[in-house]
Length: 332
Length: 289
Image (cartoon, rainbow over all chains, first blue to last red; front, side, top):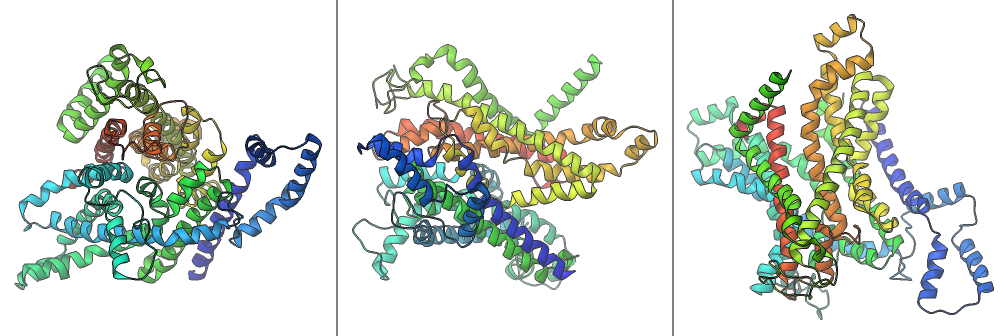
């Protein structure tokens, strides 16, 4: 039974990845217009003079070069094979750099920003949520509930724009954008690290503020159930200190389901940051995508799309494979 | 018949009054609707066209919300843009929920192999970030309209409704009254439409609000990336243009702040209504909400 579950999961993962690659293959081909024609159009627009008879030769050469003269199913399998090898083609605007190289360069910034803000938001949200359900917590804790609800309904990049305006433009406390000051070279030094933190503060804050409500509200829900358990009554009857009951008995148990959500949230970090990076000119995956869209760098756009699907698929797979080890009931 | 309807309306109104979340949410949404319906009669919406007014003017008596870098009156832009964004969300939500409800109904009611295929497809699609597919599609389609965008988004927002409805139908299918109907010789179609459908409508309505909110979120996301309709001044495109022409660091706050405020009102309104409807459908939530 266990084996069947693992195999089913692996097959599903494989299907998602092939599906993602297939979408990248089919959709651009469904659209009117021919990629080679578009390239020639571009060349003509830039004023490259050419004779019309040589144009046909160019088209033929291009078609052969990109394998477009092959039958469609051969093209498809070749594309699939290349994509699965993580060969995503050449970037048009960063030529001769390859798409996957640009992705790997941008990845650390995205993962760093998102992983750190997700963890902060998780820790703060879980603590607030637990306090909101705790009967002996100060009364003002309840006032946070509507605030968290409203904040969690606001898209993070819209809040980001407002934050940049207030803290960077009007008050000039923090930089307007980027991941480090222009002119500095990335290096492993304390000064550079502080610079990175200063630049990451606002994007991180906008993500934390808009996602903390989700963690707080779900934690509150679980905590209410845990507080009704017998072992809490027993802990109180034993006369244990409040603080100990709160942290070691109630919060610890309520955190279990939260951790599962955290694992999934961490898996989706790559796709979560796209728009916040646009607002903050942050040099991660989202910024790469924004620039690729602006310069019609379609291989890059497709590469980013494939990469986003791949990272989520991998993280969901990992969570699903670890699940049965944590909770044997899942397997059946 | 009429009395019956009136009774329902009465009880609905009293439920709204007793639920502050729903009341506030509806009030926010209605204010946006009012803005888009009444606005064109008060403000000259022709000024939402490019180069119809002087550029980059701060708010004044003549232009209450100032003008943008393309020579548009911001108040007129907001009044023409808000209904476009609402239209996109409602259309995408409607199509997505109809699709999802039908698939969920079929999967839950007939079960067996059909259910397996639909459920696997749903679970698979749920793990794909919609933004990724939207990017590829929107990047390939040139000259998109608001309707195109709504349809594309709708095709990626049926999964949650499908899953919720399927789970509900699975339990409804085993209810005594459905068994009775079957024994009485009713066909599948009549059982689905007469016995099961009425019981999933509240759930479908709740998913509709959620799907609309998700659709607006996805649409605005695409627009902020510059993939929206280029010629229609939707709220997201306004933010995109403001971003592209560095309105922020030039201090032109009246360019980007109004669309953001309208969007926040919209999202908070949808969120409140959706939360209230969830409580209505699932009374266990009422205590903790």
